[in-house]
Amino acid sequence: MTITQLKYTLAIAEHKNFTKAAEKCFVTQPTLSTQVQKLEDELDILIFDRSKKPIELTDVGRKIVFQARNIVNEADRIQDIVDQQKGFIGGDFKLGIIPTVMPTLLPMFLKNFIKKYPKVKLKIEELTTEESITRINDGHLDAAIAATPLDNEHIKERPLYYEPFVAYIPEHHTLSKNKNIDVSDLEIDNMLLLEDGHCFRDGVINLCKSKNSNSDESFQLESGSIETLIRLADEGMGMTLLPFLHTLELNDKMKNRLHYFNEPTPAREVSIIYHKSELKMQIIQALHDEISGIIRGAIAFQNVNIISPKPNKKATV
Image 1: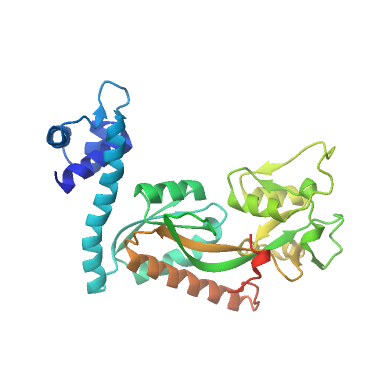
Image 2: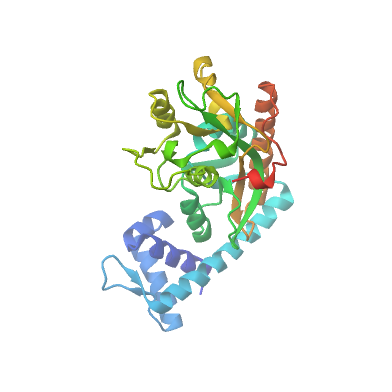
């Protein structure tokens, strides 16, 4: 049994196809097939049911793949230990970012990070929190940036910043005259929401207090993007809540529609998350330091102190 054989097995389990797995492993299909066959012969079992299309794992194969993933991760730690000892920050790094963070945060740190750490080859994907957790656990993602806490025993979290919620309220709305608002003012029936699957949506719902759970409203609007919610609010379709960083690029007219919360300000914790095995910690640390520093700089430039390192826990969602 070799690490190479286990890696080939994991590739087949992922792609459910020998040819695609071979391409991802940069070997010929016969080479990959031969090595996996040798592993099966050595163990005297079948890992894959080749009669199925696509290929499926056998019952024992699932258990072997689970253990193989742990073994390959631990083997990778050897090179990781060497890199850390040498102070080397480089190599491939796969990062996921949730949709409500990526558009605002990525342009803030990416250029500086690439310039500062040219040996790191970043591959960044926009993923939901659930997708990120699955890929981190499967070994297909090194880390992700997501709203926390997650309470997942396999995932570690390092907070990057705390981002307050800001109300975007159009003219003629019942709350538009209020300079500041309270969480108790919010009503779910009058709120434009992101589509299901967005963790920011869940945070907003947790804040809202529906005064009429049997509302006779003629419509309920949900959207996949915060920009669409802003446009709908401008059309008088309701109000919405925005993460603070989304407010920085609004024009002056739109900023006049922003209403901040009275203390305690509701906020979300945004963290970099990674597997408890702590692989590639030198890159994770570099990302953490770079993003945290840039956020502090951006807030200082705005001459506001709205992102607090210690938000009221009751208000954090």
